Image (cartoon, rainbow, N blue to C red; front, side, top):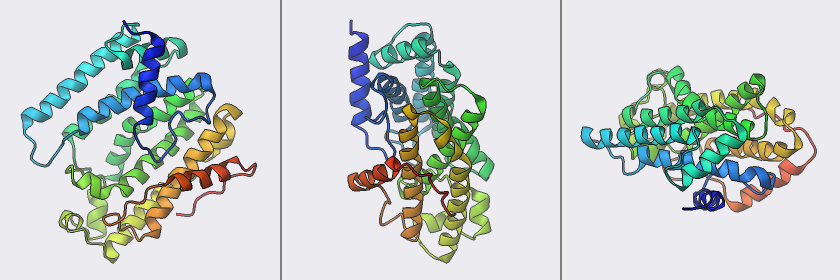
Length: 295
C-alpha cells in the first residue's frame, strides 16, 4: 500500500503537469502548506477531466450519463475520504488533508456540482446563472486555500469569492473558442441578445463592433469583481500574501490582454508566458499597494 508521502508526491506531479494561468501550490507558498494545495488541486483536476474529456457536440445521452456516474462515484469516494478511507492516491492525500485541516467536505462537493453542470448544461441564460456556476466551480477553491492557511472568517471568504469568480470569468472570455469546440457557451444569452450577437456569429468567429462591445461590457463587470476582492490581498498574512498578489495580478493581466487584442480570442489565445509570470512576480514583490484595474 502506498504511503501518504507517495500520495502527496503523486498529487504534486499531477499539479505541475498541467499548465495554468495562475499559480497553483507554487514555491511562493510555505513548504508545509504546498502539499495540501496539491491534494486539493489533484482532486479537482481529476474530477474536472470526467466532465470535460472528449466532450463534443451531439454526444449521446448514454455517454453523458456515464460522466455523471463517474462524478457520483467520485463523490462517494470523497465522503469516504472524509472518514479517513482512501480509494486511490489522490484520495489518500485528500483524506490526510481533510483530517489535518478540518476542511468542510461541502466545499469539495460544491466543485462536483459544478462539474455535473458542465455535463448537463452548455448554455446560460442570465449573468446570475453564470455567477451561480462560478459559485460552485471557482469560489470553493479560494475558500479551500484560505482554510489551508487557517483563515476561516466569512468576510475574508466573501472577498475571496469575488476574486475567484473574476478569475473564472476571465478564463471564460479567454477561452471562448476552446469552449465552443466543446459545445459550451458561458456568455449570458440575455447579454448576447442585448448586443445583437448570435451563436452563429460565435461559430463563424466574427469579431465585429457588436461582439467587441459585448465583450467589453463583460470584461468591465469582471474587472469590477477583481476590484471588489482586492482588499483580501492586503488582509492575509505574509504566508499567503505574495501568492495572492501574484494570482490577482495574473488574472487581471489575462483580462487586460484579452481586451488589448480586441477580444479576438479566435486567432490568438491571450495566455501568459514564463516571462510574463516573471515580470508579474517582480511586481508582486514590490512593497507597494496594488492599484485597481480599470474596466
